[in-house]
Length: 216
Image (cartoon, rainbow, N blue to C red; front, side, top):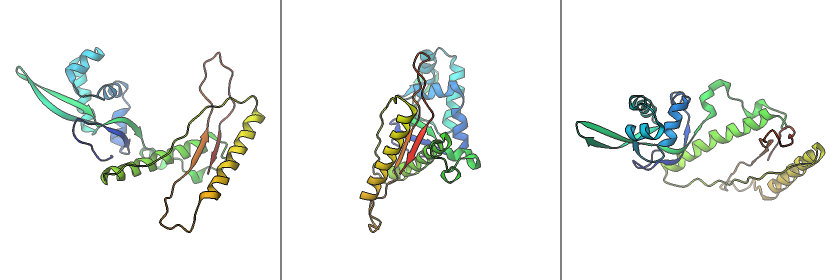
């Protein structure tokens, strides 16, 4: 689990690498409660907000706390009862492919860069490595530097899509050759991953072709 932040202040991202933590997220109602704890709240408050029995909310909160996904902020006395105020440990949670163990698909297992499996493998590695790097950065009190580019393009034909994929691959390869300095032993090493996949469309929209992925 990534390094914790001060109590009551959720981290920006938690990468779950523990199967028990991942299992705690698979219950839809539990996940909904976790999303509701982006700000501190009690079981009573969550029960009112989501229209659920308080005992049921308490049970799920205990499971989330046991899994290390929520933490205690404070305890308030309400008459003869003590109200526990909880908060999610992170604003965003992603499950690392490490949870799959031997079922994880590695980059070396895929050769067709136009296959969805290749893109999924690259994305899985990105999540895994970013989780590790984010954890190290948090432990060292530093900020992890990354870069994200995202856009959408609609092709008139499969031929146009394929031409785009080739030109994109050639452009990325050119930039890598231009800026990569193998002699800079202490240089800043970055992994570049470029991928493309069809946009999810409404049934009234025209369909899209298969996925295209290119990696530099």
